[in-house]
Length: 107
Image (cartoon, rainbow, N blue to C red; front, side, top):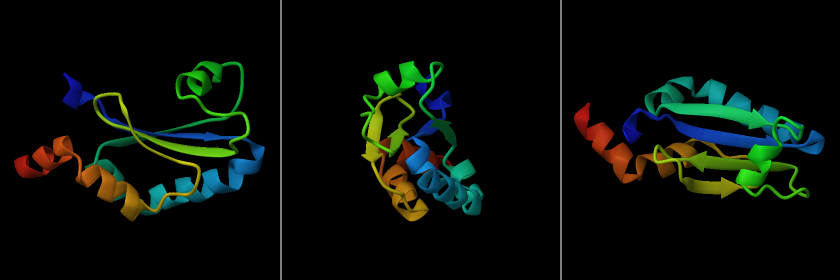
């Protein structure tokens, strides 16, 4: 069942993107309740042999120091950014999704 899958935020970063990564993770921590409410799982990936498949799968360019990708419950990419994303922007994008709207209706 698709709805059992959490939404995912994938953060890809290189050394020069580590500052953005830390800022992004801090933004999520400050808004933990909203993250939990929207069932968002955050994963970060640094270039390494174990992570090569993820970098290829999501077509992360070698020149990108930081990439933010939102994955919906259906496993599809919903949003991508090369910059820090405010929690309001992330929550707004998720809350506008049909599946999220039906979840809100059930509560």
